[in-house]
Length: 309
Length: 51
Image (cartoon, rainbow over all chains, first blue to last red; front, side, top):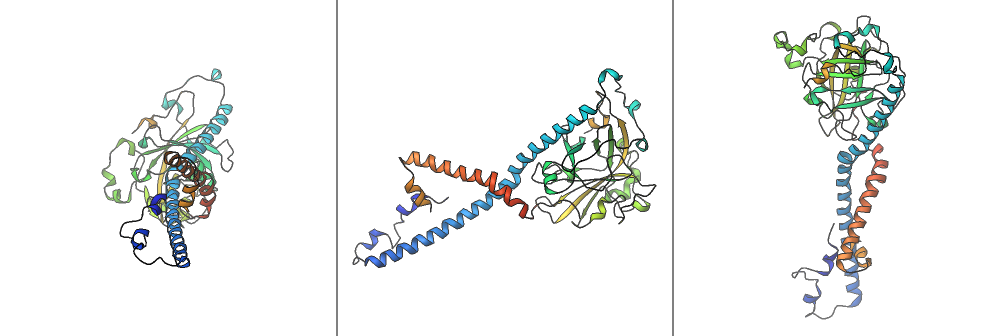
């Protein structure tokens, strides 16, 4: 803000200052009034422009920092709500035998159909990315309008549910509103993306990147078992893609194939979408992964993949 | 505008500075909690879904 005192401390060289005006003949009163009015008007416009500039800067601060606070509050409320729903759906611990051996809980995704309803703007799943740290978890809500995405990552209406054949597609903010997908650029191939639903854990892994395709055959990391360069209908689907905002085919059952039908031999794909580059919405960053493992939920059991880093 | 406000603030300079700071913070709070949330949906800054 400009100093309110400035009008009382004119620079010595200011020829309009009273001191320098003193030797001259006293100017006529109306003339002085006219000059004062002009000065006031110019000063007013100057202050207004400075004020508007500061308001614009404050808006940037609001977008980048303040909406994060609001977003994390909404996210916490959504997480609390979904925890409540899951707790009420759980069988009482007394009726179950505690099983914590992952091998005993492995399920066949073909046998698991979602037993839950989703409501727009309400959480139904949780997303974990162990590579981003053990504290990285977001409740995924249904829907991708701006209100939904303020709460957290949003599931594209009409795309498949976690674990199903086809494409479980989720959008999230890169910057602001809780910034859930800010770090998607740091995901590497074979990194785990773990989705928890009411009854299941689904472990997806990021597909090979385009630049890794040529040397993929020699990759021998234990995390990469079952992850290969995509062929057939899936040819050209990579772990990370940068595309245009209108590329809706990225979230269709077979990415890049312009059809909402799920072929009988469709894979179980996860797609994450966010803004690219950071602080811009000129392009979209797309992450594709495929399902490699699923577990039934059991009290006290966490998938071993959550411990990866 | 700011001179006008400054002249109408009562008390010695130190007190006026405090009041000016309070006014500034009140305006910032109004912007952050009322004006910007209302304005935001009309601005195309952060669309990140496809289609």
